[in-house]
Image (cartoon, rainbow, N blue to C red; front, side):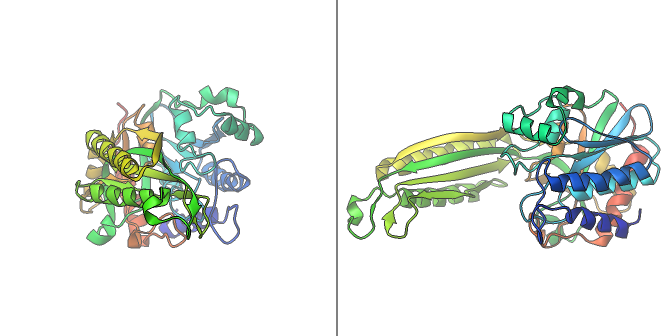
Length: 383
């Protein structure tokens, strides 16, 4: 498979969508079934033994004995781009087609983004023995013709001795540095919370300013404090990404506001200290504005160190500059790292665009990634 064919196959998978005119493909949807049909055909043609596990992960093995697992995910965010996740799956198949010197298992994870049920990594969590057991997820598995009673069979074999994931960077760093690739040395830890400010709804014209308990004004003040806190801590990012306002009318003072907070850093201590400061800021805002504050933790994922040395060696062997990056996004590699040594290679995202229809890749970067992957496989040894 040449580079143009890799890109063509990504575009073919992109056409498997729940929303005509856009790329939207969620966990075990009819669009995912269409994508599975394509990818299974390519795995079969590459000479792999192919099956689907009970979590909907499509898997294929080339060769026998101890093996390296290579993969990424096939699901997408709503109105996504064509390469997030999918490129890693197609590159894995391309490397198998080149007949590597070691045994390889290719995996197309059924779910990474968390769109359909609000729970990410359904596919990879099953493979490390920590399946999502919420009833809506189990029912979706049944509806797809799979048996959730067989989830234990999704756990990776003892023959899997390592994991490698190719993925677009999804950010602007490599593009700004004019570099094609990077070895990923860590994936940031993440904290997510839902914060609610409860005030008192009232008439926008008849309630004096000094008698208001405006939940939206309180939330807005707090959001500014979150931004200022994150801006002074190196490499920390914090985002208030969703706000729900009630009653939500132009002529009514907001009585309740629910907001999400997302905090990320490669050092868990830094992340948790910053989160504590942001929580305290919310309490202070609520207190001086006469609001009631409620909070609910949604996610707490520790930072994960990845095995970047073999990737760096492969990059150098392929004749490219060696560069390290911390991933600010979560990936299946952080889940697989619980069981086996895990590595990641980032490809440049032109313009830093991802999770958007304008997401793209450069032909020369895909070529470079294939070369690095071949070098990685030549040097890989089961431990």
